[in-house]
Image 1 (cartoon, rainbow, N blue to C red):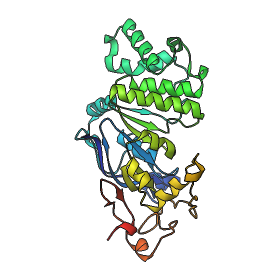
Image 2 (cartoon, helix red, strand yellow):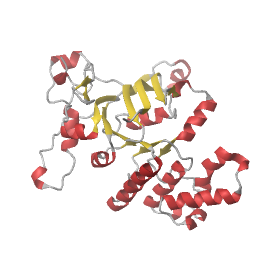
Image 3 (cartoon, rainbow, N blue to C red):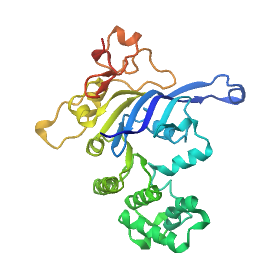
Length: 329
């Protein structure tokens, strides 16, 4: 049975917006953005956990919070039982060697003034320092390039000389340089054509099989999440509204928001196509979320209780949870 590599408990990450000098100095007029608002989930070792939802729902913020690229205000993030939020600089540095990120912007995360070899070698140098010889360093860079199906000659080129798919593979090579146990992949195929995206997906599956990597797969592409992930969670306005094994969420979708998302996924088989559920209105502002259930302003099944009480995550069986009053007592 797979064990939890990362466990997130009641995590809250808020940002503050305000204008003018008084806001900056004294906090007057600041507005709170509830980016991540009480999320709990567990990512099992050696598996892929998919995180889905509309743009602005808090997916990337949740992932960045794990690495403390943004600082949560409340909750726990346990990595192998140790709270990342309580780690000192030395412990955090060690954690970040075991946990890496594949960023959404494939070119923006690559230094245009460094060669690909220098980019991939950078994490190795930070770990080994002056103790690693140039010969060994060059050998490891070549092996990493081969691992992501790039020619070793790529090491002397600059990022602008590559296509989007090749740049993404360079990012993957850098991410696996320290042989991490955990990788957050933030929209890892955004901006790529279908065939190139498929190459990236297959590459990351192969690396997972070979290295036992655990993935947090952040995406709005439900087809990819269904293909890649073992477990998943659906986020809406900073909260998890449904989570469980991916096969259960897709076959037994319980939350109205999940049903709407999955109904919009394109299907090749005409016989399996269902009517798309169109949600009225837009996602409310995370600065001023609705009372009770956050989804009630767009839900076709809303009733009085939804306006007054926030629905808890209820276990529907087999670890499949849903936060909806239709399923609570």
